[in-house]
Length: 332
Image 1 (cartoon, helix red, strand yellow):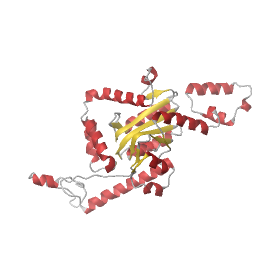
Image 2 (tube, helix red, strand yellow; image 1 turned 180 degrees about the vertical axis):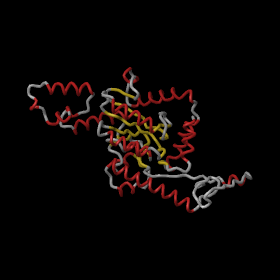
Image 3 (cartoon, helix red, strand yellow; image 1 turned 30 degrees about the horizontal axis):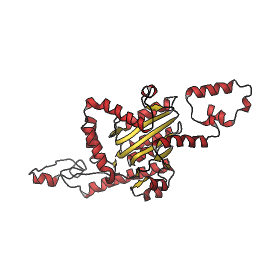
Image 4 (spheres, rainbow, N blue to C red; image 1 turned 135 degrees about the vertical axis):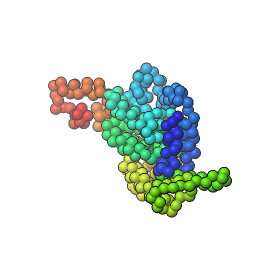
């Protein structure tokens, strides 16, 4: 697919939220994406979404297929899988677009049937471009509806930036979480070209400028490396700030993770996640937590029809003063 080739070209000389521990998975995801026949795209996406439904025990009935996202019994599930790509609107097991996640989030927020949004995360990371903007939108969206991120089985770098923006983050026991760091890659092909007898001459203006900075046909100059390092450092500072806002951790605690990838139990101890559970356990447990946090059942997320019915009942009640303050707030 053309989108995959464009995404692969963007990895070179751009800040990426992928670490060496997961980079091979990321490259494998992109390679599989690039080799996908466009004619099979629709079939692959349908099969991918069906596999997510099965993971949560959804039966894939009529109600599931009539919405743009995976849906059943008040839950909207949005996959965050594979290589995460900017300016891409599709969803496969090996690649998901930030635009796809954003579009599904918007649809779920506007759908009165949806009570809880679930982000199903299994990603080694992705592009820095577009990542933080989406993460900020997700954090803001949790003020409208509860959002649960379920990690099964990898939530690294850009994947963690997205997942950590949810109201709560649960992970399966075998999951790996973390990789809060930034990387920029440069490939120097000069040695290979020398052996092939190929010499590349670069002519640029201004002669002492940065027009050819990062050229793969020669080593990086000290000035280029310093410039790239500055960019990576700034992106990392933004990443740390994002996790502090999402998880309530201190900046020192985030920095101390040193971009490592942790087991689920280790991530729980570091407060990178909130619990260790299977996908089906995560959904039921999250609903139980929401119920505990509410003053009464009227405070739980409701569909538009249920809320309208409750509001009308309160308006026509002979004793409106008897309504609990919490219920009145929920109606408002």
